[in-house]
Length: 451
Ligand code: DMJ
Image (tube, rainbow, N blue to C red; front, side, top):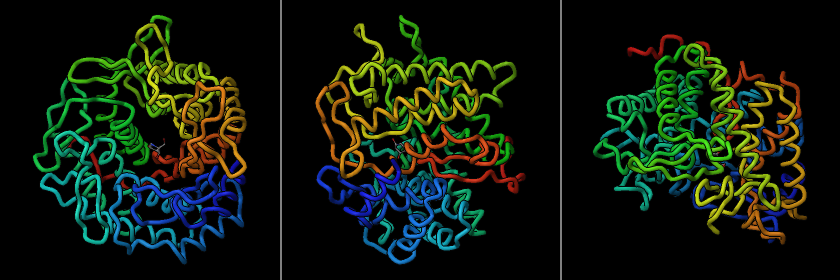
């Protein structure tokens, strides 16, 4: 599958960001401005892990010769961080090739002006030439987004570690300080925070889009620090407790789901993106407050089951972008604009963690169902395409091979069918784009719960 995705990208879209597998041409997304090569950088570590050595070398040569950050481009700080900085760091740690470290640090420096706001909460969008930032025009009251500014921590800690320059770590630690000084409604983190006033915007709370990887990065900051970052641990478990109280519900037929919270009212909808949380709960279970380890493993298993149901209840056996638990339906998309599947990884990501942590064979079975569905419904002669409607019997290709399909979906699937000693969870953290960062055992004194 990786070969099919890679060779078609190489053939039809080499050097561009993504591939249109039906039209057989390049696809450009505004997320990266005029930075090029998203699929190459996102795929580097997957190629390495899968021992596709020649392909890794050609990707490396492209990075050496063509990856250029001296462009007049407005980019999404979050997307560039998780895919490009994360992809380069991971390639560096796996291969030891200096070029990847250099490029990661060069890009990290370009992203620093995003933090020039009164509160230090970064802008969502940044022109990496002029250093001028702004927020998404649609975001509540000019706010920055929790899942965006909260998903820089792991990469920026590594940038400081690899460059010897503390500035990257200082920027992300200040985000924590701002968050810890704010009152949280019912202990929950709203998705919107205004970088000028340093105050929350609209009270919308979600473990899916707009919130998701903020929670993921709290847990992983704790794990990546070799369990020294007690502040991250406390923030994670406090947040999870509030989420359990206010967002997690069980349907009448026994499916556990994570709803969205809007100013105290629940919307009984769960996004595909939210499905990553099964793996997160299980990954954090070992360090849960006393007596709660089994509870969190169980919660992970229940979320995995619900997300599997969302796949199983479609025609193509791949899940919709969002599914509902109201009006008599359970785990089914009811709105036309929520029926698409864009090759996202979150469900197989949760299967990967559940497999590694429990070895229950059902996770391999479910992962194989996803492989078969991808082969049957998403594979086209020019690569892999997302689908516009997972309930339709006829093809509904969206004609995009997302770069995260190579970075995440195929990597997690590969790991589910590999031995546990390939990238053991005791040594490696996956960033939110499935790029690998080693656990750092040297920053023991950097963060304490009282500091
Ligand atoms: C990826 O870029 C990352 O997994 C991110 O956290 C969420 N969106 C996509 C995949 O769905």
